[in-house]
Length: 280
Image 1 (cartoon, one colour):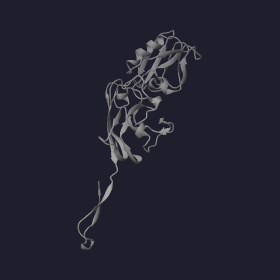
Image 2 (cartoon, rainbow, N blue to C red; image 1 turned 90 degrees about the horizontal axis):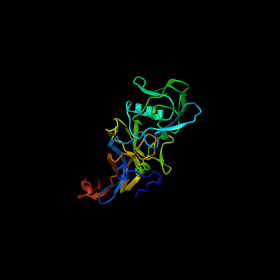
Image 3 (cartoon, helix red, strand yellow; image 1 turned 120 degrees about the vertical axis):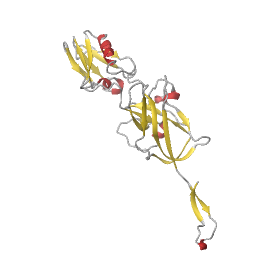
Image 4 (cartoon, rainbow, N blue to C red; image 1 turned 90 degrees about the vertical axis):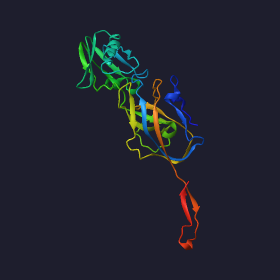
C-alpha cells in the first residue's frame, strides 16, 4: 500500500483523477522490477495558471503604502484577455485611470496611470502572479502621471514545464535533481518525467520520451502491486488540479530475467551439451 503524505492530499478536487492509484501485474504483483520510465503522456491543459494560491498582489499610490491587495480572477488568460482584467482590478483599488498594454516586440506588459502607481510582489513566486506578469519581488512604480514596463517577459501560460510524479517510484529512482527541488518525506523525488508545456490552455500536452531505450534504475529487485501518479508545475509541490479531466500515461517497466539449469540428453564423452541455462 502506498501511503500519501497528509500535507499533499487533495481536499477539494477529485483525488481519483488528479492523483490516481493503480494495481499492476494482474492477479499477482509484478516481481523483480529493476527499472521504469514514462514512455509517453497525454495531459489536458485544463489546469489554471492563476489560482487562489497565487493570484494576489498589492498596489499603492506611494512607495511606502498604504498597500491594497488586488486579486486576478482564477483562470487562464492570453495577452489580450489579461489587459482589461488588470485595468479593472487596479482601478478598483486606487485613484487614477489605468491603461494596460502588451508590447508585441518586448513581450512585456506596460502600465500607464494618470496618478501615482506602485506595485509590490512577495518574494515567494508560488504565492503571487509576479512571474506570470513579468515582475520581480519587491516594490516598483512611479510618482505622478506616468508609465512603467514590467521588468521581465510575461509568461501568461504559466511554467514551461510540468512534472509527472510518483510517491512510490520517485523515491526509488536514482536520479539527480537541483538543490532545493521538491521532496517527499525528506527523500529525493518524486519527479519521474519532465514534460514541456507545448500547447495553449484548452489543448492537450503530448509528451514522448526522447530517449526511450534508457530506464531509471530503481535499485534492488522490487515487487510492485500498487502505484500512484500525479502532476505538478514548475517548482510547486502542489498536486495539479485538472478540473475534472484525466490524464493518460504509458508506463514501461524493466523486469529481471532469472535463469535455470536444464539437463540435456547425451554424454560429455560424446561431445554433447549435458546442461544449459535458460530463462524462465
